[in-house]
Structures are given as C-alpha cells and as structure tokens.
Amino acid sequence: SGLRNHGWNILSCKFDCLNQNQPLSTISSTFNDFFQNIATTKAKLEEGIHVDVVDEQYVNQLLESIENHLPASGIVALSKLIPSFRSLFPEIFRRVVIDDDGSGNEDDDEEGNQCVTGCITYPNSDTDDDSDCLFPDNIKNQIHYLFQKLTHAISNPQAPMMIFLDDLHWADKESLDLLTSLITDIGHLGIDDDINQRCVCFVATYRYNDGRRNQELFDCIEYIEGSNATQVTYLNLDGMGEEGTNAMISDALKLPTRLTRPLSDVVRKKTLGNPFYVKIFMAMLSEENCLKYSLKERRWMWNIDNIHKRSMVQDLALVLAQKLLRLPKEVQNALTFVSCFGRSVHRDVLEITTETESCAVISDRCLVLAVEERILEKSGETYSFPHDLIQQAAYERVSKEKTRIIHSHIGLQILMKAVFTGHVDPFSPLSFIGIEQITKADDFELKNSELRISLSELLLRVGRRAIRTAAFPSALTYLEKGISFLGDNGWDLNHELCLHLHETACQAVYLNALPARVSTYVGIVMSHTKDFMDQIKCHHIF
Image 1 (spheres, rainbow, N blue to C red):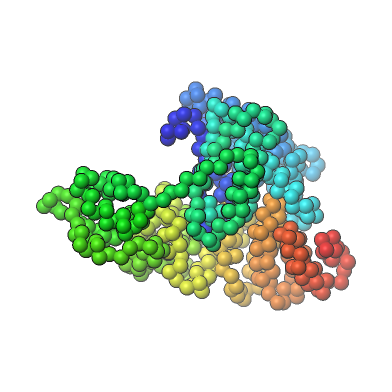
Image 2: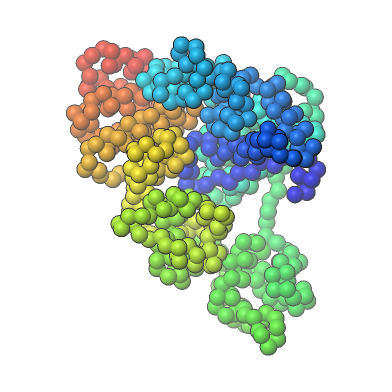
C-alpha cells in the first residue's frame, strides 16, 4: 500500500508447481487482471458513473500511451493472452479483425478466419499451413517484443511499475524466457535513451536450495547479470535473529517480550528462526498442549521443559505430512484431491469433477475443516494452499499410481462434461485445466475409441496453438499425449488424425532442437504413408 500511495502500479503473480493453464498464463493473467481493473473504470466512465478525477485522467492517459506504443495489430495479437484488451479497445477490434472477404468480424478466432496483426499473425484454422512456425525465434521474438512495448507503455516516471514474481523456482521455461526478455531489453526499444524511462522494478522470490527446478532459473539470472542491461540486487532471507523471533512470538501471544524471551529462545533454536517454521512449530505446540491458554491466568502458558524435548524442525515437508496425518481420513483424501489442481482451485471446478459416485471425496465439511485447520485458505469461491510446501505434502501423501488415477479422473470429467459437450471453448482456461490433468496422468488406458479420438483431436489443436505461441515444450507434450491415446492401432483407427499428430510432433521436436527424434518421427510417417502429399511436411522439415 505504501508504494501504491506514491503512484506505483504493482503487478503480482505466483508460479505453481503444477502449472495448470495455457503457456505463459501466469504472467499474462497478471497483466490481464491489471487491465481488467482499468476496463472496469472505463466502463463506469462510459455509463456516467462518478469516478475520481485522478482515476479518469490516469485511464485516459494509459490507453492513449498503449495506442502510441503499440500498433492496432499488436493490440489484437496481445488479446490472445490478455482478453481484457477487447473491452478496452473495441474500435480497434472492429477495424483490424477481418474475415476473408474484407467485411468486419469482431468474433472470428478459431474456426477458419485469420487475425491480421502486422507484428504477428495467428492462423486460426487447424488446417492452416504452419510452416512459418519452423522459425521459432521469429515467433518468440514477436511475442517478447509486444510485451516489451506494452510494459514500456504502462510505466513512466509519474507511474512506475513493480512486477512481483513469487515462487519463481516453479516458473516454466517459456515464462523465464519472456521475463529475461523484459528485464534485459526494456531499455533498448528505441523509444527514448533516457535512463529515467526505465521505470520498472522486478522483484522475485525463489528457494535457492531447491535443486529440482533451479538450473533453468540460475541460467536465466546469469544471463541477466551478464547482459549489463539492469542492476541485480540479492536479498538473502535468512532466519530471524533473537529479537525478531521474540517480537513475532510476543505479538502472536499478546505478551510482553520479557515474558516470551525464554520461549522464543527455544523456538528459535528448534526452527533456525525461519518465520514459516516458527508458525508451524507454534501451532504444533498448541495442538499438543505444550502451549495453551489459561483462563485462570488470562494469558498463554507453556511448559518449557516439554518444548526443549521436541525435535528440531529440519524437514518441513515431513512435519507437514505428520500434521496432515492427524486429520480425519476423508479430509486427507480431500486435500490430496485439491492438491492435484496445484496451488488453487475454484469451487465450480471441484463441483464438475466430484459430482460422480466414483470420486465423492470432496464435501463441504471437509473443506470447512481444512480451512479451520489453516491447511487451506478460502477467498470468495477459490480454495488455495497458503504455501507450496503444504500443497506438496498433500500431493505426495499417496502413491504416484493414486495421483495418476486422480489426474486422469479430473481431466476426463472436465473434458467430457464441459469441452466435448460444447459448453466451453477448447482454448478456455477450464479446458486447459482438463488438458493439463490428462497430460500429468501418464499412461492410462481408454477402451472407448470415440473418446480416444476426441482427446487426440483436442490435443492436436492445442499443440498447434502452443507452437504458434512459441510454447514448444508444451506443444510436444500435448502432441505426444495425443499420439499415445490413439495407441498401436492409431493408423488404422484414424489414419488422417494420426498423420497430422505425427507430422506436427515432428515439427515440435525440430523446434525443441531434438534432431534425433526428428528422424524418428519422419521414419514413422514414411513407413505408414505412400502418398507424397502426405509426406511433404516431413520432407520440408527433414
């Protein structure tokens, strides 16, 4: 609030260990939330509702700045990732989005028409030639360039911007590449060489000792430092000292610091002063009656000798797992189910996936109890884990085979009830939740051939979309999953679909710089086709 009071715009996002949505969705949704607030203010102005004069001026100046920095075609292109642009610039969409015969068509997107964007062209038909995508740097650079221009448009000395990136160690490669581009190139757009124009501050948090995901992040940071394009400052958040720990416990127990000093000294030794460890440790002491409220004394009391006997908190994941085991079994099952969605999930999504008898593990009572125990937090109709380590503990409490079954159930329920019935768009966030769940389920068998074909067709479409947005690793994952659904008899089951999946997968492995696998896919296509026209795309790649 302090920075906002001084005119700063703050955009914040949190990366998830189970990335659920479309490629780049974590970053793009942050920008979309920002512009959605602008769109709300704009709508009030258009309806004649009174708003603060400062807000009115800011909105008008911001929209004018965006139009000055970005061509209309660029705004249309970014709307693929920032949907709120459609309500902010309706005239541009009526003018730029056209159909094949030149007549205006604001709603054309995925069924055969084309968005003419100048900076970047998105072919919308699934049968369009994707040969232009064989130049991956062009696609990626175009997207990065548009975000660079946008970031420059919405930041200035009078309204600087801070972008806060939480849990960056979970960021995917596409997001890291975009962030690297924004940080290193934001001052080199040819707009103004004045250093004052660089009015963006990036703040990121990550666990430096998490070796599972850190190599790509470290490479990104090393590149940023080596570019000399910006100053990088490190803040190492070690454990709190004696005074900090005592102040935290004193505030929590509403007692003077002189009374809590003996307790805080022991707690600090057991937790190494880690604030999150301190919070968990204190909660455990309360649950085990080592720390309890005395009605007679009207204050918190504790047994310092029993606390001394408690083991040191070294493995937080183990501590959290033990905490979960003390909950009722049905609550544990509910938490594991919720954890399969990642950090957070909306209640509507839970209702879609748990309204069948085969998976009736979620009940209001379970969710309420989890919130009361502070294992979950509720904001509106969204449930979320307060820390990614809690989500990890809930996710890993069962075997991989069990989580595979849960992922496959969730994915199939969403796709069959929402996507294949036509209730939601195949490229909607809900659809991508279902798709990501399916891809995380690893191998599972489906006997229904029609369902297998429907899933493969959907994965082909999203794989092509991922290629067009330079999300090449995600594209390859989708396409190979689509191939697996068709099985060993895929060429007999649906020859044309199998051909499109393999030739697009061949393209995807090429874009991911995997030459050995290119020849594998080319060999598969050549061995199952005789018509030169069926082989031409692979010839073009190989």
